Length: 211
Length: 211
DNA sequence: CACTCAACTTACGCGGGAGTAAGATGAGCG
DNA sequence: CGCTCATCTTACTCCCGCGTAAGTTGAGTG
Picture 1 (cartoon, rainbow over the protein chains, first blue to last red):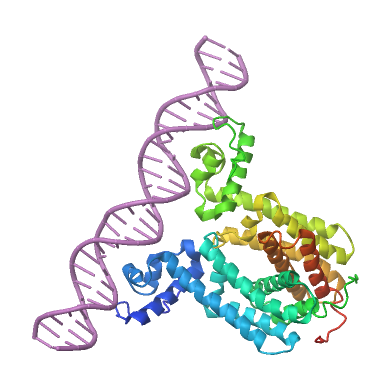
Picture 2: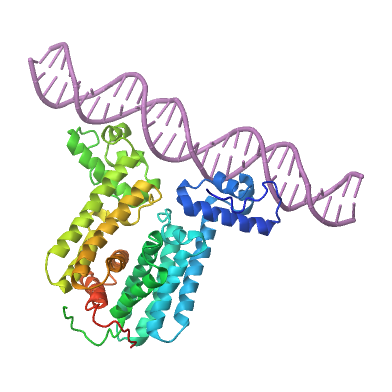
């Protein structure tokens, strides 16, 4: 079942940088599949077709290995988000692009999103801060857009952004877990529509009517 | 700092049911503060002013102790949610009540919500299923309401519900972490407004306009 | 007042996994 | 062709924390 994606010819020597990349890749598979705690350094080494001390020649410890991956993928998410928002000046399309970015992130790169969104190490301050900071940066990018077009206060704009990011993250994760029930495009569009209806023309009607 | 909330007179004997409740309470404090993995059975026993074997006379193991708490608080959340949606027939108020329920849940009972929303044991199938099932039940409650008033398909209604629940959970957690920046009422209202604008009159305008 | 049984204690076994010491191997260079 | 040094291996040590064996205490009952 688990194809040894990189454990080619157990016994091949590799130059340092190549080996490092491969170790990161093996570690990602294990951490994603098992979480931090259930992941064993032995298993990561095995997966890379190498013995444990090799791992320790590249990373000082399990935690640092994990943090390296977390850092990398957090950056990817924020970058995707930035690109999405810069891809157009039409706010309606920005919303769509932003959700697409979230869905893409969740759909991509061996489920690495689980490190960022579902870490079982969030009780460690270093990890909690990294995750939350990533989240905040995404929200901040969206917040800027909102502020540009509404007379809303900074704090309220930020809270709205948080809510939207939460919506994106949650629905993207749900969509992935239930692959097949709804096609990606449709899911993105649906949730984007919900968000757009929610924020567009915010200033206009301060009175809330029922249906 | 950490008041020994229940560790009265180390050396007091307690009848079985009373002791059990107290152990659950001590366990909750520790699990919430440290997460499952970093929580030590010794510390839980200490916190309860009791030695470790007592713990094992009430619960077969660490996992079962944890699951008991998870189960309990999951039920509380779903129940709060059900009450909120049954508290009125006006959908606009339903939305507000629903978000209030989430904020209340997060604000209440010694931050027990962290067990449900931030468990570091989600890689264990039993826990993952429990958390996800709780989430789904909340979404389903909301989904029923949505379906009653729209011509939307079941699957789409469900995805919308998921998105809304994610919004509620995320914003409630954020609000709690940044207590003081926004008062509870204001946060609830703001996010409820966002959600209501998003879903109300969904069927009417199938065309999306920009601002 | 002795007897019983639930409630509690101290002190330990033991497994699992992170990290390491010491040695083997082999690719490339002089 | 043999030297060197980076790469890699085997085979440990050690700690931490769950779970338990065996024994103690004391409240209530006949």
